[in-house]
Image (cartoon, rainbow, N blue to C red; front, side, top):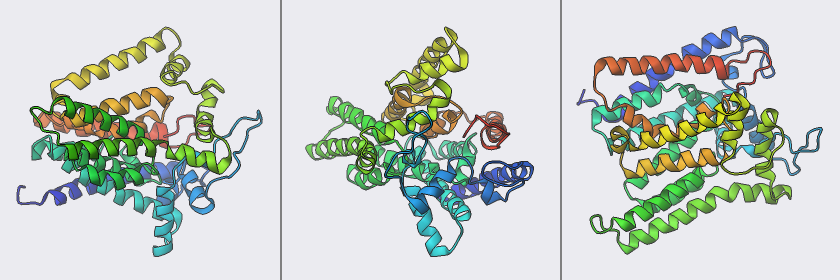
Length: 387
């Protein structure tokens, strides 16, 4: 096994994982009744381009509206400004070069980007784990419950590639290369703001530990500069949407349109959405108790020996992204997909070497993957569990 190049091992893992998911998707597509996006029993490519994939297709061919659409009550309705341009425009470019239709080209881009993400993920894990554990972490990454997102018309694969590459550059302290990576990542999916927070915490940590880990002036300037750049990149899309539509709150109003069916029209107040969601799902006081318990459990997980093995930089990212989700995200069925950027946590789950544990972990992921497809991807009438 040691004679096999690391990239070939990752490739085999990723291909086998995608083969399993392909079978799942084909089975569900064959049984899928007529819905808002496809006829009954659609092809794989058609089935892989439902839900938000249709928004990316709309952007690729029609761009973004200069005037925000309004619903019957006069509020901003769901629209393309919720989705960023790198993925749909890249797919459109692939279409022009290969003559592939949108449904096929979008899947091709996602699968290739997912492979790139898996390769970078292995390299990232190899910085903090031995080769065996790094490979098993990559297995878990490839068969994760939401891994079907790697082979549908969503931007997650491409975003994860850039995010994991940014984290690898951060761990390696190659600050200069972070600029172009963050620039592209910030227009693929939201994520630059929590990365800016992680970078800022990284700078502070290196400053206070500089006696045992030198932090030269050149690196201080580079790290501080890329932190500021990430912060600006994180809000750039809000500014572009505001300029294009003439509404300063175009992006936030658009995002709020997606939670209106649950709790009605509310203002965006940071760190309240999880409690609002828990109240909608569970009522009070149980909802608040569950949110607080999740926060405490996550904090304890960050302090656990297995997670501490991941190193300070990856833990700072996990903390920063968790704070970001807590601040702005309204939890519903999409929460599972939104947890993908916390994939470095899988490194902690890869620490045990027992064969029975590893077999059970992979089997459990595959079972949960089927469950996620049934719950979130398959369309069952008036479905309210989007992926």
